[in-house]
Length: 381
Image (cartoon, rainbow, N blue to C red; front, top):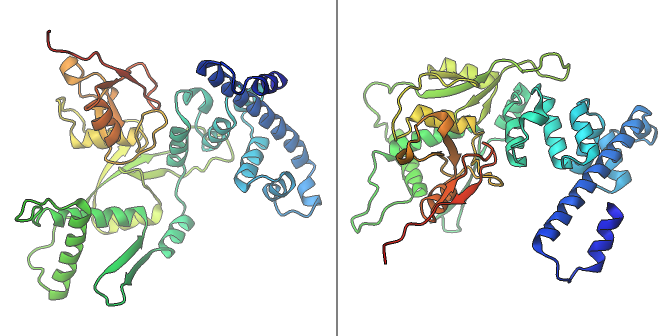
């Protein structure tokens, strides 16, 4: 096939060939690339057993691959991952060119977390969804939490006359969620509209809320009883699906409703501060029962969590203003149930569907949704 593709490509680069034919050639090329990567992985597995990298003075096989084959370290990591893979179904599919090399590496990493039958189960996922699913199943270790905390920073850079500052902020997901929630709660108490009708932006509201809270603290003006503790929604994946593999980390994966993984230290901190914990499992949302056109907040959080915290349209990984959307519209008999809801970003929800008249294809895979255009009604002539 490789020689045929080369011959076709060199003979009619500017010829009269349909786009479908050229698209198929690209797919055929990707199949050949996958087969060649599979062959590289097989050869590398033999060299790994022979400890060739150590004999050449390299610290790791990844380092040896990057230097020897003139590839990036990421490509070298992927090759070593494929070479050391013990998942026969993934290895076979790669060798036959049935899956791309990118899908093989992401699926292998997912399978290494204990995810049962990863190749078949995620056949309808795009690469972005595969990556998000794999990351969501990896527990956050104490060392990772410590590293993130030690890299926290808040920098304020003033102009020469100190009339204006520019700031940079780096913090962990839990701290950032706490800060954002507190600022938006304070923003509800502030004016959102100027006398001339100008509406403040969200970033302006966050800014004003932060200054307002700091002013309260400096003036020691806070009075009255303490406010109730924050409500924290936590999702727990109790144990890996496959407990037989020695590579599986047996500690539970704990995530907040926005997808942020938290480790033991943070969970203990939440308990010690008296936060109210809403506990959900990864297989069942608790306390959902209302059926109406409006999506209840708890159901919305569950659907976004189920969809890995990102837009489910194929090729889109946006996390901007995520909202559940009825796959079968409410007016057409669709119910407000989790099976009939898909997470969409603002652009695909408001612009594509509600402004340009597209609809979700209910037969498309849940992590690679497709559109079809609804018939446009016209006034009678």
